[in-house]
Length: 570
Ligand code: ADP
Image (cartoon, helix red, strand yellow):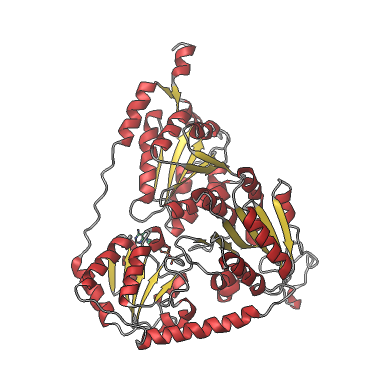
């Protein structure tokens, strides 16, 4: 081909960008470099917003949360070798949380594999433990088909992570426009939607029979129900039957925390005494005490609703319903309609839960009313709650991480809308905060995002405050700065010995670090708050400005507990 003809040809980078746009990708997260820089710039030329990060780990966390928030795979782009390895954290986090995500990495030239090429790694092998599906394009013609394959595998059945490997020689191969149009059209052919097992009507009848006969029924829902957009069905089922409900941390908001049937503030009583529990899109893992005694009664009958058959097989519930949460709930509602039942406010179980919840809320409010300075965790958290949920509140998407900060935040901060809480999740992943904030801001344009996180969680990816400023995202990061992981020096006297005893304790960071100045380095707004007045001012100004800001809240290093609420696991 003449030089002019070669120029008219399309390379693998362009073809991949076109395929991604055609597959409906609207946002990508990542870090550019050899050999994928032009893939990112071409993607932008095709209308995709590329959010360029400093570290693939944080970009990967963003992609995973984006999958949850939008129900479309979050796409992460990385370079080969080390870039791919940094991105694994995001891919793994997506898998652990059952969120759809796709990592696309460049890789070294196929001819040079095994010779110690630049950033060489067997990336297909590296991603294996963390993906549902992976593929390598060994030829430019395969790119469109594989882009569509990773995108659909990520959302099919139980959502999770997928991986596409694009070797640099494939990215530099060229084809004609006519060939490109042909392979893109072949890839785009409407995929036949897998028709899942039909919902078994006998099982729906059984489930309704169990709920109807139960003396102390409970409906538990988790982030799988949130992902399934099951809020309307849940509300209908709960309000027509009068059954109390309990959300998991990221299920919070599907029904408002202030709902009269919410058992959130009576959690111990609700799970300890219920006799039938309908669990929707939530695993009976550590977050739900494995569904085992002593936290649950030994004769509780579980009805599990989950998209994953393996999940049901693993837990061996009394009754398992495999399928989409909203569809199954709708079948249950239809089945009940013929012979409706409702517990009513004066039902002893509903009354017991409501009484206990009111008592616990009153106890908590009494504690929150005590203003403690230097700050403990409760005082600043209460001020944040009031700023978030007060009159004319901005109702932000809330991101939360850190041991004590997340624990205290979960009980103090209120969630009234679905999918407005992102936290460390199933894996207890710390360091997700900035990535989640960026994902939330780009997925919900115009909405305020507020992160409430510990100084250690913030530190994992603090440099991404530059990304906030660069894209001018409306994100306010509130750092609970207690000077370390759990805060301060937590050693007993007999542990402070040996040649390095004068080193700072493993749990401590520089005390009262000026985290707010990090964002100022890039032109963002920083606040330091050590008193209620300073905090109230910082929140009110930054919430109305809707510009990137860091609020550095100085907290007593010894106010929290080591390992937060999970001390028994340490
Ligand atoms: P939580 O942390 O809130 O308890 P988990 O992540 O443990 O929630 O559980 C979510 C569950 O939801 C997973 O087992 C997943 O398979 C399931 N799931 C995902 N999508 C759907 C859906 N559309 N319908 C029903 N279940 C779903």
